[in-house]
Length: 152
Image (cartoon, rainbow, N blue to C red):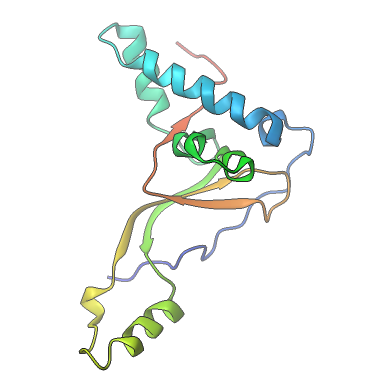
């Protein structure tokens, strides 16, 4: 089976620089509020269960928060954890060039077969800023939809 390479075919959208979701200042607040909201959604109360379902089912185009970003020391990395979901998909763990280099490096120990190439089960692409190039790839993380519009 063939997968796409990291970042292959991913392009952001030109967005307003005034979008409060895409500013570094608001990212920490959004991450903290999302973490608390997620914690409150883990309940047997039906309204909490519906909120939990909405939070844990982000769709392309929705505003999202990558909870793992909250635990990063770098403000720049935390900023990149809040934005709009562009894509989520399975893809190769490395690019074709990186894979070829790994295969060449293993020649003295034995050949790496294509069947040994690793696949990333979920790669999330989040546009964190107003420019189309403001896209961050996240893996091995928890991504939650931001329920900015409540529709019971």
